[in-house]
Amino acid sequence: MNILLVNDDGVSSEGIKTLAEELRGVANIFVVAPKEQQSGVGNAMTMHRPLTYKKYLDIPDCYYVDGTPADCVKMAMHAIFKDVKFDYVISGINIGNNLGINAIYSGTISAATEASLLGKKSIAISLREPATKVRSAAKFISNYLGVLEKIDLPKGTILNINIPNLEYEEIKGFKYTKQGGMRYIDSFEERVNPRGHVYYWQKSEVKESEMKNCDDLKALLNGYVSITPIHTDRTNYDMLSRLSDGVC
Image (cartoon, rainbow, N blue to C red):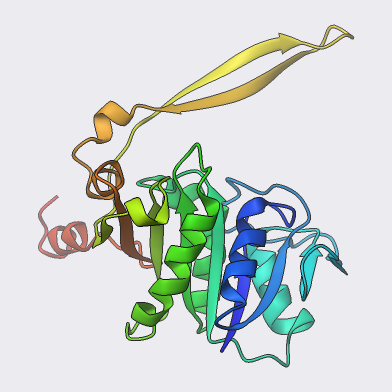
């Protein structure tokens, strides 16, 4: 079995290194990750400059790309490991949740989605902060591969997996959930640099109190792994039906 690992936290992230170590016991592991942190870039691709890749010596069969998570998937499958037939593409382990509306922004999810569009069975993995139980999350994924093997994922569909920050023995199991809702509270902190120029740091805060009834977060809070099938079809079918019926 051949598995491609990608992420958005960068090639030096503990999450991808630990996952590679854990999965080497069950599969041939290949790693292609961004050179630097790429969280929040969504499905962005590098179109207006050349891409390069280099071998990363800290992880066997690992390369880093000076681009986005989506770039990494494309480079892995069409250039770096073009002669390898991958059975799965796994994105993560991401440090921090990817719940609700995060699916739009997440580079972790977008990398898995890109692989799915290229015809590969793909999952995205995120670990709830403070994300200290990375080995536990990796062990869960290793054991979940047997379940994943039996699931027929349509093209453009991935499983978005969020894992509670617990020891492996403390995880109660997993639940299939729907994507929850959340509301970001955005703000910009104004600062002045030494030359007197004003600049801003964007800050976004999620009010978890507003998410208590969301399936995906609720599963995590109760000690379960949340697994949500998501896909690229953004059609609002209810609205499409209303428009077609002339009801606005």
